[in-house]
Image 1 (tube, one colour):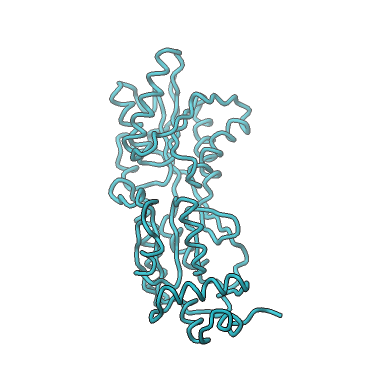
Image 2: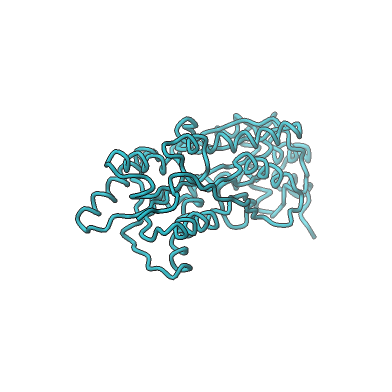
Length: 331
C-alpha cells in the first residue's frame, strides 16, 4: 500500500496540516519540525508531488561565477525568459547567487521557494543538497541523470561550427574551451573532436586548450590564444581557425590575433557560440552559433510545471550565423 500523508504525520508525531506545510515549504514551522517531517517522508518513501502544491514562488539559482552579466550576458537573457514565463503564470521569481562556501539551504529558506530552477554550473554537492529539499526542480543549461533539464543542442552546435570551417577550407582548427565540469562546455568540446572524425581528418590534441581555472572568459581566452600562437612559432604550424566555446572567449581570441598582426579571416578564422549582441558589432563581425537564450529559460519553467512530462531532457535547436570572421579563405 502506498505511503500516505497520514503515515508521515504519524511517523513525525505531527498533524497532517504540519506535514503539508513542511513539504510545501510554507511558513509557520520551526526548522527542526520541518526537517523532522522531510526526513520522515524520505524514510517512508513518500512523494511530496502527491500534494500537488501550486507553485507561487520560484527561485532562479545561479553560481557566483555566472553572475557578471556585463562580461557574460548569456544568463541575463535566460533569466528574462524565466521571468516572462513566471509573469504569465502568476509566479513570483527571485534570483539567488551562491558559491561553494555558502550555506545554500539557509539562503533558500530565506527565499522560501515552492520550486527551484538551477542555471549553469553548480558543484555536485550543491545539487545533491538542493535535490534533497524535495522541491520541484529543473536544470537549465545543466544536466544530471533523472532530473528535468533543458539544454541547447550543444554538440550539434559545435558540429555546425566545425562543418562551416571545413567548408571554407580551414583544416587546422584550434578549440578554446573552459572547464569540462560545465555540461554545455563538455558537450561543445565533444562536438569539436567528433567533427574531425566525421570529416575523416586527424585531430591534433595540441590545438585544444583550456582557459585557466578562475579566470573570466575574456582574460582566460586571451591567454589561451597567446599560448596557441606562441607554440606555433616553435612548430611552424599555426592554427588556421579557432572555435571558442562562447562568444566572449572568441572575441578575446580575435583581439589577440589582430594585435599580433594576423588578418581575420585571411590568416586565421574565428567562430564563437551563443550570438551575444557584441558578436555582430565586432571588427570583423563574429561568426557564431545562435541560440534562443530566452526560450531556454521559458522552456525550463514550462518543463518544471508539467505534471507528467513526455521527456525529462529537452534539447533546443541552434543555428549557424556566418559573418566576416570566417569568410571564404583566400590563398
